[in-house]
Image (cartoon, rainbow, N blue to C red; front, side):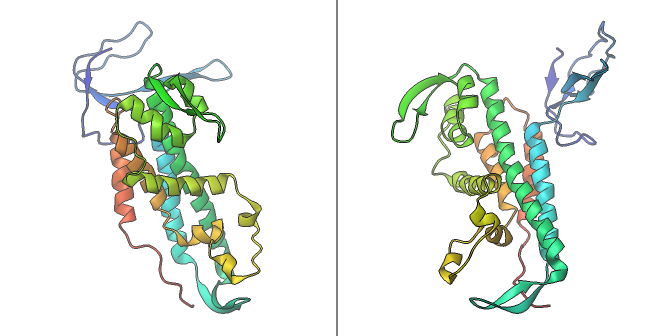
Length: 283
């Protein structure tokens, strides 16, 4: 393989590309028919697939984390747009005076919930993929962690590769990645609280309970804890992709091409700095 070096100016290259470099030396044509490339040319990591009819297909390899973040960002953008389109009117609820989403805004409200759900799932997925990729690059690293059911956990030492399928994303971020990368655990640090909030939102969406999908509210005090839909409507959706990029950035993995992360972080930081929800107001 020809030597390649990182380069910051990749105009026209999709930011979700997994690896982009510039060739430092000429790359000759291969016996298989691949063309030659001159030094200074952009080089992208690619992969090959084969269709059901036997045709080979070569394409640039995306960063799976970047794809997930891109979906989360698009969903957050859409949710923000929809949230501003929802209109309210004064109303009276069983618990007193309230605001009501007007009938004409029902579609926008439901579309908002869909965008919130998508953002939660794919923000978390970006972290899952990232953690697994770090582990895959260090499969033989020994990691000591607690394993077993609650109340019966014991310390065991396993290879990182074994923990890829046996550990939760939380365990990977808290214990496995710090052991592999020789970094302090993020638990108790700034990114962790945001991660836990994202984790809660993702789990509530993926494992939605009846109390959230069909809430039965009989007393005002039941509103104190809220429901998933109520929280989705009030929370800043941008906090979810922001939590993902901050946690990935915490680890600063030098072995992974992070241009996609830099781009995603710039988008998220720029968007999340914009004031969000308008106060509830009548039409």
